[in-house]
Amino acid sequence: MRVLNTQQMREADRQTIDEVGIPSIVLMENAGRQAVAAMEAAFDDLPTSKVGVLCGRGNNGGDGFVVARTLAQRGIEAIVFLLGSVAEVRGDARTNLEILGRVGLTVVEIANAQEWELHFSEVSDCDLIVDAIVGTGFHGPVSGLLETVIADVNGLGVPIVAIDIPSGVSADSHDVEGDAIEASMTVTLGAPKVPLILPPADTVSVPATVVLIAVPPE
Image: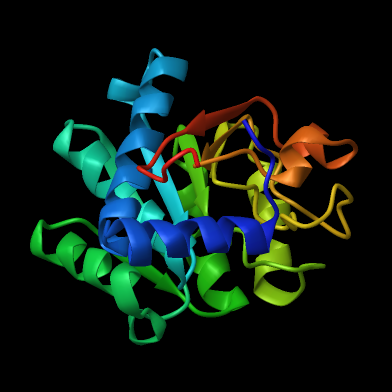
């Protein structure tokens, strides 16, 4: 299997959507459901766990919204923490965020450090954390609220599952420029990314499980 960087993965997605004809929202649905399947295989106690899903405003966050909904459909307690406001979420991610409201899942909006501090006790009460904050579009180093969130989450001592790539890591580099999520497991979508394979970045993202989301191998 090939190892891809940001632009290569973006092009693979484009070809899948525009030339093969698989809608982007189907890829997002596949990503979230396959991530949950990988989590079920890795964590025997997942059915009785409380899962905190940390989501950003982009497509990585959209994958996280699908993860939360899929967990809830399996009877697993899940709570979504949105780093930003609902108004800032667009496209397929917004569609999946609105679905959460219709099925009764809690979404906690966290727009600044004060709100993070207010809700951190809820995050720390979780048995497992899903990192769906930023994906392959990120270029570091992290700063501000994201830097605080990453440091606090890493300090919890609970398993962390990163979706596609740990937040704070660039898909174009095997170096880590600043703080990054220290993932117990990374569920990467479609193909491995550069920092999941090469040191030193691979040390914050092992083991990496590749899940196929309907992107054709060619």
